[in-house]
Length: 479
Ligand code: FAD
Image (tube, rainbow, N blue to C red; front, side, top):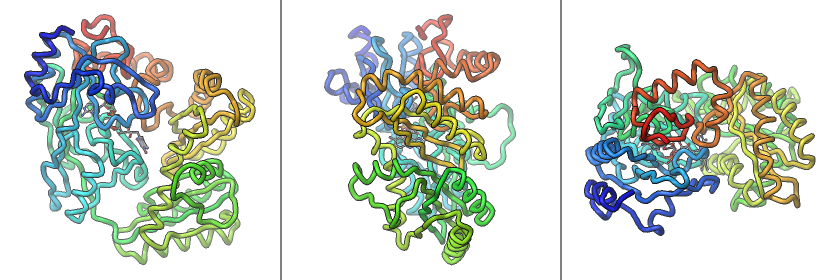
């Protein structure tokens, strides 16, 4: 990229928000898990929608590739620039205003760069709930959540972020601004453009604002931890919980003993509240808007029936907000606690809920046959059929040799996911990580339709090239 072009971009944001020195740029080049490193001559931090528009207009004119970046907490290499190219990183961090909270219409309107936890807090200040909740909520941004179609821990009751979004404002690759900030619950006017941008991982345009749904804050909230023998028993408990609690069942998370051991070993403040050891654990979260007593009654009945029938080995109900948070802290620590254990080969997959035990049994057998001693830490949003099927290296194994087998283990696990008619990306997206596999799991006509959509929105191929779809050699800026 020429100094002249850098100067033209810098004129748009002002030089203070156009980062060019290697040390200023460095944090924007690496994804949070350190798996993806890229290069870039320029990071732009626009402070308004108009600046985003001017940046994309100039990028279109000059065929400059642009990589939108939110909180950079993604897991699939979507927000990292490509290696060896001159991708400009467009950070949304300064576009972080809460524009409006409307407790009557039950909506919140926010800039794309607003951090998820800030949106939750703004909703709470208006006595409302914004239910999207992720382990990364202190740093991920709503624009990143929408662009990855994030799921999280309350999908059972409220759906993923697609279900929580009513309207979007997007800057198109040409620099045109589409104001789709509608707040309607019903709107059947033509193709749903909003839904195309959700989950597009920055390949179609830059989301700059969103209208999001709010809900009444629950009056009753209970969290329990149950010790179980097997994923099959966890499935039975989930079935009962769904029957007993209906819409009040907000979360149902599965954890293996190995994961609990990892968290207690590596994450300060995590402790196991149950006296004995259990092979598996379910975290059950129930919230009701009618009364605190209703939530308590539901969880007590569920657990006591489970214990009487021998389904549950032992269980505890959190007695305070601190204890509720402690149980969730254990669950949310499952992922970071694997890092100090050495190499980890991860899979964010989903299968129909009823198939989880069979899928996990087959996957365990296949992985252990390939790598005896591998430590399988499969946990996650069981109620959504979403398992983070992670495999830690055998104790004392060579980390580099272990992670070099990533493709082989991915192929084993994803092969079984396909057998069980599941998805190789439940909630993290495709990015760079699963781009080549996408072409294998989706029918040719689907990939072709995706390419046509991409060409229609981004004919010059400047938006986050090489992510989601392999680069289309027929478009100029995409190579
Ligand atoms: P980034 O990582 O910055 O970007 C993600 C993608 O979106 C990239 O392709 C980027 O180009 C694009 N993008 C970002 N902002 C915009 C924008 N404004 N317009 C257009 N494109 C944009 N994910 C879940 O779904 N569920 C979980 O439970 C969950 N738990 C997590 C726990 C931890 C501890 C961590 C570190 C991550 C977790 N994640 C989870 C993954 C991650 O937090 C989500 O994918 C999140 O939605 C990414 O948001 P972000 O702002 O960090 O986006």
